[in-house]
Image (cartoon, rainbow, N blue to C red; front, side):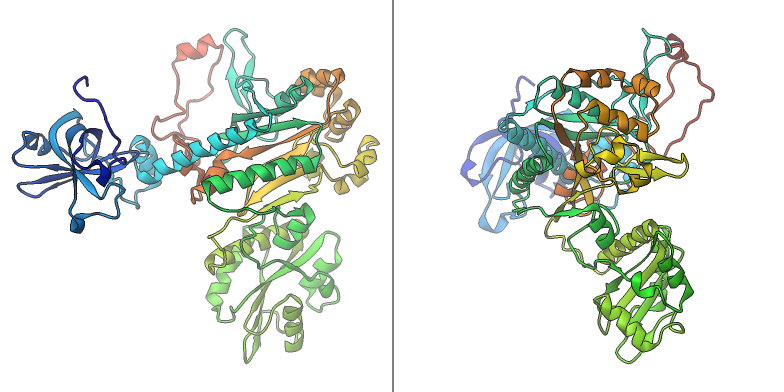
Length: 595
């Protein structure tokens, strides 16, 4: 390598460099043999440069041996292309490099897939991830991710925040998902846990007087995965002292605006706020996609005296809800197309889907014997519809109705191309319930986590253990939603001992259990705790949105599959028995479960 020193990247050169002697290094993207001439497109992460090998150059014989993905060093002279030969699709399309020397730095086997093939299976891409990462799209994604974290740091550093690292090996403090446990060799029988989030640690930093903290934190959760989840993930963790909800929201509004202007060239504007109840009733879920309308309509009261018993029974029972939506200009939907929508709502738990079709010349519906034409027109009209529309309706318990209609809304939005993908739509969701009831465990659980503060107007109910009022308690919690994804969530935290004790009582966590799990934190609360709150951003999801993809695996260098398996390194994998014995561990059964 002492003879070859890279002078430029493969995306640098242009017409101004005509005549310059250069040295480029990179991968052979393509090779074209035109008899007397050989053309090679040389690639690195900065771009492509066309290399020309002439028959009167000694380098030609080396060029004949080149194949895709060979790593080479090229010396040569930049030559401006004739106007008719300019390639406007290439960043360096004004020039080419006439090679005088070529050295093969590393040969390569024939790749298992072509890097420009967009139809490669994800399984193959993940197995050969180091090749997949050479693809321009993947390189662009990781560059965007780098810029994202860089801009976050730039912004927060100007706001007097300190970046402070917290431990990866920590105490197990379950937060809803399973912990990944790490056995300790020097403390036999004891385990560290990989943090699901730095929740108690960042609160301890507030107690320690570091009133503005942030961290680009690695977190771990042993849970079932989806397209936007991974067992290990990255979040922007942020905490502030002496703040209320509006101050946290205001800071994050400015951060969003800054990031989207720098990375997206978009003006976010003022982010609106809706309550949890409003989000559920209008969109069916607490992370609504606001890039299109088709809001849900509640017709429960209309159906209390209906002769259709399915509707009237639901409308008159406690917790029942009847919701529908109008699908505009869809009266030409076939029966088969409508039947397929039944499977969509069933995924949300609904037992069925009622449709009312208002065509120009007739009314049709599977429940038309219970409603005359005038009544069906009236229902559609009151739901905001008109002639030419279809109304879809679900009747069930409130939660099931919301989930089913939310799934249907999103399905129709995508199928009918109603979603405006040219913009990103944000909203804050606030006033979440403090508790959720777990029918299996027959107890209340924290909807967010057990350190979330209750709103002042509900404080007495919690302090006095008024369990009958628990369904009505609202938390000082807030989520930031973008395009139907929760990209950040946080809350104002409990900073008073008696309130934290009441929270644990409500969750049926005994004093002994609380001391065992959180004793160090509870002790710290006795030494002067400022009011504080914060938020955690899912950086993988944010990067996913910024890169216009729908899977976070596309913005993570070395991700896992849906079964938390690394296909490239084939991990998790068994370890030597000697390692296990050193840790005092024996296994019941050796089992491989790959996907």
